[in-house]
Length: 254
Ligand code: 13P
Image (cartoon, rainbow, N blue to C red):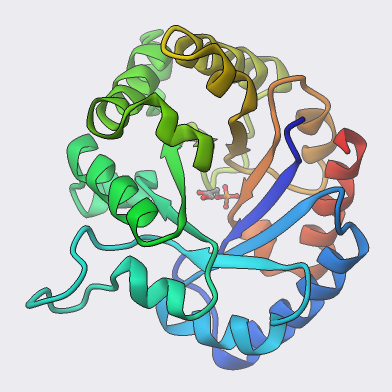
């Protein structure tokens, strides 16, 4: 059975104080659903230690929003998976569309980060998804399949036994334009069908999260879909009542 997972992505937001407040509240919320729903937050690297300090010993899991492909050396500004792991992290988001777009990360680079994260003992959360133009052109699955294929080519399908996929249509991120449950379910099902061509068991067991204006209002119907195993939440993960409501919405799958 796939355990539902609700994960926050704080992006470029937060202070030591706000992190303390959110991590404390989310730790309590995670404890309430312990064993039924997994709850996690991915924070800016500089704040991960503050999350750890305030959530240690609770059911809340945490991680990074990115990681480098290298383990150490002359790579100014980067954070290695081992550094992220040292602060108690479980997850590392890789391939978020904001990194693919603004930081020109290719699918090959994202695949290398996926591999590096796993080798460093982290669970990669691989983000995939199409732009509005690609959605309009009907190429959603071609985009998602190419982004998945780059990872499968590098590490093999079995690597998804210890990974999470997040389908995040770019046109839905931060726009308030949530994909309808029907659209999202259709893509999630197609992603699973694509993975099943390589390995049916892996396809059936991997968790696929939905991200893109997923909020307290839209989460219940999204999480009611058979192939949507939870959410990757941006804006709403910065507000305690909203994120807590989204966690509660995931309980219906438990
Ligand atoms: P929003 O929930 O703010 O649309 O962001 C989604 C996202 O990009 C999560 O990674």
